[in-house]
Length: 265
Image (cartoon, rainbow, N blue to C red; front, side):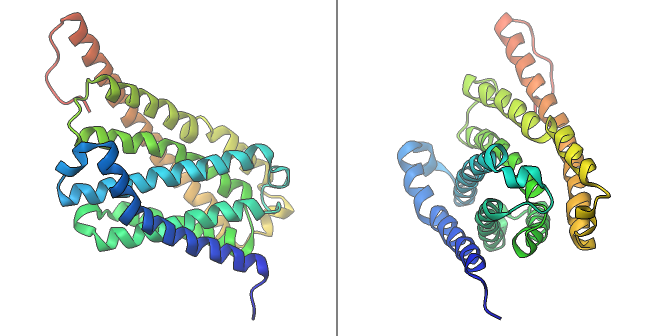
């Protein structure tokens, strides 16, 4: 059975996305990193692999995040019918992310000793399972798109690692500014938006549109959302504590008071 033209387009976008992110990892990131950060050359081979992986991750997060905001504010069809609204733009955005996730999975397995992480493998596979229902059946476009808002917290998380590997002290101004930004953005795009997300979920629960979603789609939607948000709350608590400790230590140092012993992360 031949695919319709739009399905062919979505497949092409996913494949192009996969190839583009591979190219960014192997060619673009090393070329740019050497020129903007001399410290890149001093890194070990494992650190360079993770550096390039995080550079690509930041680019993907900004690209998909901005597209996600555009859909959230301007795509009336998806906002008016969150379960079965016209998923055209959402499918394009999810196709880009699907290509990235498959690319990242391949890199994780190939460079397992450098960036191997079972949690990320489970996360990527769970996301791909959920995206199957969006790309394959066009359902739940609003909720799939809303979830991609979380990508906005990725650049600050990656930047924290860049500063750490380049030897920036935790109390340095760039590190502290990034830490505060990370806590604020993480809270806004992963925690503060929960009432909006679950409010829309509650509004459609039990409706005819809801029961048209197959059982597997409902599991992928509801269970994964709850599990992800439990983890988001745990991470938010950890980030907030770390941010508070670093700021308190910096304030003590500035005032000349003795610092407490112990870790500040």
